[in-house]
Image (cartoon, rainbow, N blue to C red; front, top):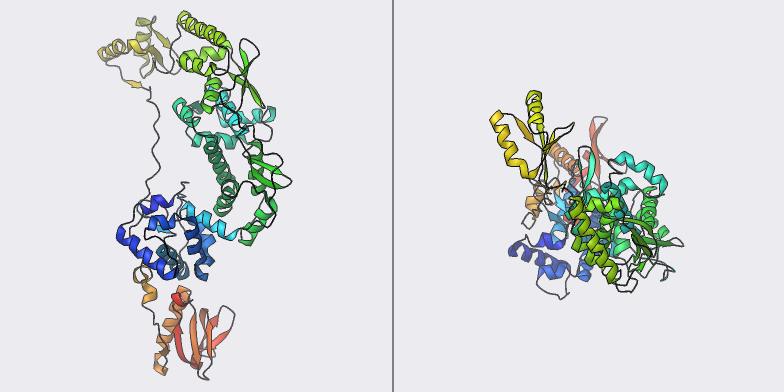
Length: 564
């Protein structure tokens, strides 16, 4: 799922299309003076609200359905056919600039509604009936950061290699937390990758991720959880809006959220309570007396507050330190406790692993200087450097190459000739990168077929570029079948009964109402469902189960969609 913004859509429209949208807006909102710049108009929250309030009953009828289908780029194929009413509602929303058509050749859906329009709809329709209530306790200890760091640490230490490994951990120290969902999040953020049926950390992605502001991380994890747990996109977008866009000083009763969704004909199930529970456990939100608040991470202290030393390999730091510092400490050590302070523990195993990975010692020293005495940091720095030189650790990520030799005869020859420089494993042969040229020259002399399985750093393709159709929708191009229908009274003669049948059938297919004048001068309006034969004569059956005989009709007109 890719959230689409107004800015993304508007920048692909030409000036002529924008001018046509402005003209249509001026026709609808008569007397409202505003700028002639479409971007400024639509990016104005109050103006969007006025446009939404000016929508016809037909547009309002389908708005929830459209938010469900088009609230973002969902990468799903529409299966159902659109009725004439839906097509007209889509056309009217496009003319206002509230909905955009995308290139169906390059995308799997045909329309998209920007996030700003969706949120403006919620602002216009949701009213919190309760008084303003201030939260008793909205202080967060950033548990969402702690759980992410812990899971990444477990993957780094190979304690979590696959999804099945999460079950035992969940019972031990992650009670109630959906670890499978969290693993899905860090995989979606490209913090880990899956290869050889196990997970690996992507260091560069993690470094970038933890440089983000807390509110960005909080929004990302909340949005992922909400969209993953809730199957209904309208419910998901609404709850996301309530948490991050609705005034934070107000407590939103959960019952009002449920009531609003029920009023919008959204079926409520336990998944809404499940997502609230998960966000509560991760301290993205606070639930106090049945009301939801956004948990506050801003404690009002400086992030460079000195830590409390409690041992040579063990020290405490405040949890509101810079996130990238937390990630550095997590990589070099372990986080044991997480309350108002985080207890960081370095041991030989974690330090050895980081030195093998050639982690930058100076980066760690720079972080430690913020929280530990200068003399302690300097002694640690000398210790790291001396240990690295003494151990002569090999960089397992960069300086080793793996070869899978396909012929056993050649494999035994290579093993015998290169026994001092290679390591034979079940999967193949490992050599140091410095010997790569000599080793491959040997293979060329032997004409050995090899497969070099050393992979480059993973690259991730960008999200599919959004392609908006640059056109102002017109009735005759969008709904040509409706434009061909008679728009005035059609007077019936005896021999034209077949023509009348054809017009009624068209109205049935297009789901449009018809207006009838009977021979007794009465006028009625109905939605035709089907043509029936009764006693040898044709009758029209309406959606209200009324029947009108064709012989009793003197005039007939199809009600044009714009007059609905």
